[in-house]
Image (cartoon, rainbow, N blue to C red; front, side, top):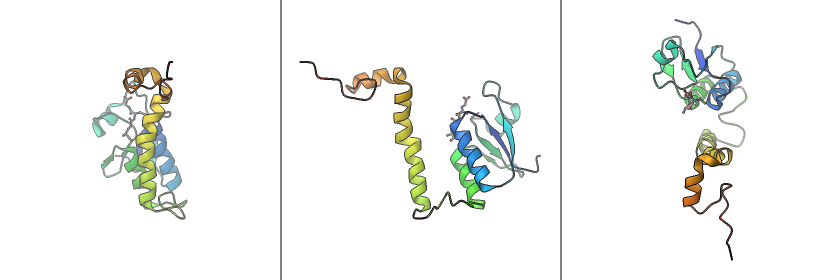
Length: 138
Ligand SMILES: N[C@@H](CCC(=O)N[C@@H](CS)C(=O)NCC(=O)O)C(=O)O
């Protein structure tokens, strides 16, 4: 078993980025284990059978398999830049902002980035693929 927490990560995954950023901001030592999503190592799947990254495995064997939980685990121990409670805002404010980014913002971002995947939904709602209402034809 590793003496340091180790983080299974994929470089371009935004959720893994969130975990890496929070760990870096916390200053806590950890071992980074970059993986290829197409051939996930058996240790990753043994730790977290759902097979997503990031996954943080603690020295005692505890597994944290959600990026938000990794972020909170790290910053609750050491948060020198005050990410969880910046000046003028509370932890509840920060969690609400994250929830908005993960929810409504991500939903709209996906529709902007991948309009063809959501064409049927846009058609049903009377929207064109940019999210604007279809122009009235006279
Ligand atoms: N809710 C998870 C989402 C993690 C997630 O979806 N990660 C993607 C990569 S960005 C993943 O591992 N997908 C599995 C795969 O592609 O096989 C979290 O916040 O940690």
